[in-house]
Image 1 (tube, rainbow, N blue to C red):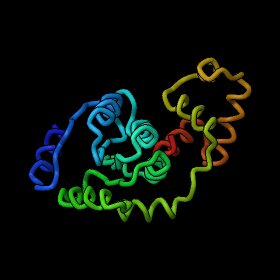
Image 2: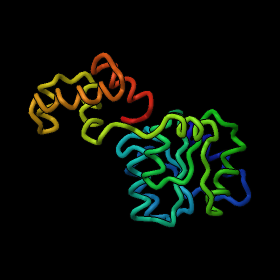
Image 3: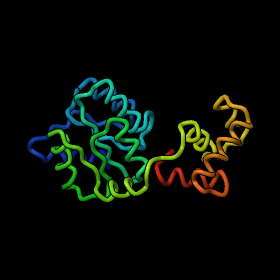
Amino acid sequence: MVRGALAALLALEDDFSIVAEVDNGNAAVQQALATTPDVALLDIEMPGKDGLQAAAELHQRLPTCRVIILTTFGRPGYLRRAMESGAVGFLVKDAPSAQLAVAIRRVVAGERVVDPALAASALSEGNNPLTQREREVLAQAASGASIAAIAATLCLTEGTVRNYLSVAMQKLNAQNRVEAARLAEQKGWL
């Protein structure tokens, strides 16, 4: 419903043509490669490839396509990860709809467009202190996996998993792995 409403809204703009609407990240990449749009509008949470994975693949395989992330997840960590993935725009869905058309025109003109409040928050938040492996272990812990299950999934020993969790908890000043995973998820680091 939201995708259709956005497409209808954008189709009202004289200088826009909607070349594809898809319901998952895999299809977004396939359609973009087939239609070579100027802009791809992606959400972070999508079935298949998420928006960050799709943005990274489009940045690599179709560098002329400018990616804007439009999401309800206005978290500093997601903003940083989106920009690292090659996105040039990041807007939250609760922004006024008129801003979207303006943002699309700005990214086509070569500018970066980021929600101002989120940009300020990202700057004050600082960089993600977690390593890639610590994020992987915490992501497994967030889903409720046991130490043994995390170790098996990530091909690590149980002692190594405990070490990664301990370091992540210290970095996040968390009392336990559940709190560490929750904090990292709230910041958009997982």
